[in-house]
Amino acid sequence: MSTSAPPDTEPWLRGTHADVPAAARAVLHALELALDDLTQWTAGLTDAEVHSQPLGLTPIAFHLRHIARSTDRILTYAEGRQLTAGQLAALKSEQGSEGQQESLAALIAEVEASFASAAERIRVLATANLDTPRFVGRKQLPTSIGGALIHVADHTMRHVGLVIATAKVLRALRKLPGEPCGFATGLE
Image 1 (tube, helix red, strand yellow):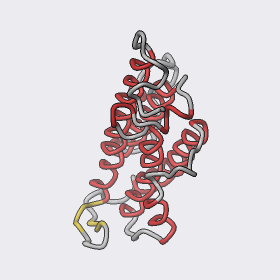
Image 2 (cartoon, rainbow, N blue to C red):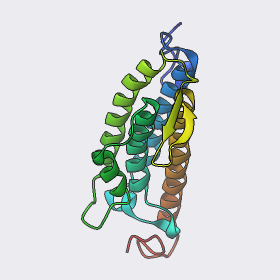
Image 3 (cartoon, one colour):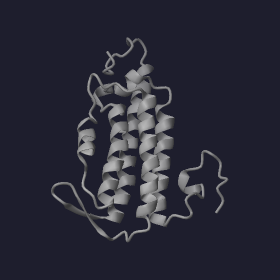
Image 4 (cartoon, rainbow, N blue to C red):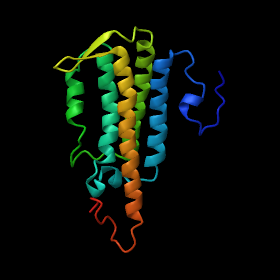
């Protein structure tokens, strides 16, 4: 397959990861598309904006933390393991706090690092029988390796969509005529 597609071509059409079985390849492409979209739609936002709650929406910062950390958690279940104390602590910290105001660059870097690690883990899982049972959480809810892999993709894209919608709201609120900066955006 060719890998010389134009840069604005969606990942699944770039001819990449041809060595990975199709289902896992689709998950890798979803993570690449997610990073492309996150980078595009958060470009130009201020650190204050990514931590704000425009019109009561969940902050972009939460979604970025959640995308990175939930990817790790879901893959842990796919690997047949339960969450560590560190992963549980990271889960509890996703909402952020007044003292936790990471820069947009740091949040995107966390997503990039998570996806790089995830790609390696997905390549290993791709060689397994995707119907192998797996169990999630304390309640040991049933899934499979394949179910967990697909959930990495769909869960990530759900939160990417929320980031895009919130970024659009933030940009639209900047353009309101006659409104003081930050009016009704949660930036005040």
